[in-house]
Length: 301
Image (cartoon, rainbow, N blue to C red; front, side, top):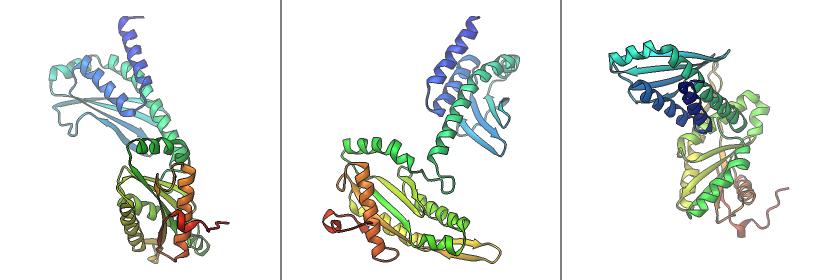
């Protein structure tokens, strides 16, 4: 085996050890810069019904020359490498060595494609297909690590259990498709009103758990809660586009704070459930803040 082949394989072994897609892309880019003096790289994954840009070395790839290599990774997926340079001699060198570069990228792209597949499978198990929120498995797999970090840094975390009032009536009156529209509308509202660092989890039929990281005090959680209740009450859901029929729903929210209301995940989730139960007892568009002294007599069954 030639020294060049050995170096390529060793480089690919490094790529396989990386867990982040952006790191893999950036290492491919650095390799091409080092060996072929390129100025920019864009990597696009083309699937049957989707085109996704997974890497761009510059925010504005405005270079003098460009060339591209497309690699077939499966019957439904291709990886497209667009290479940029500002030097015509560099372009000529790339074109002269294109077969060699093609082999290199064929090897590197397999490691990239395998990681993309891993991430896709992970998303299928963690992401709810209707709302785009995390599934409950996220809580089991990742939440404890997040809470450990927040606790070490003496930060509070607010848990909001968001329930759609009389959600079952939507399905009984209309159908499951309409119920999905209501769920998606609520998920969209929540994402718009919380920070990108906060977490949205689909818990059950008509219920979400919102995890607000690094809150200063309970008032922060209450402000967001009131905003969510008010905003969703004004959000219309189209039931029948031809007839222009729309539906309005309301939500109730239970609030608990970590670590004040519990340090174990099971406890904090249970206390948020109890708070939502109490909020619903108050009527529609209500919220309730969990307090031990106020809920000792609650029977959930």
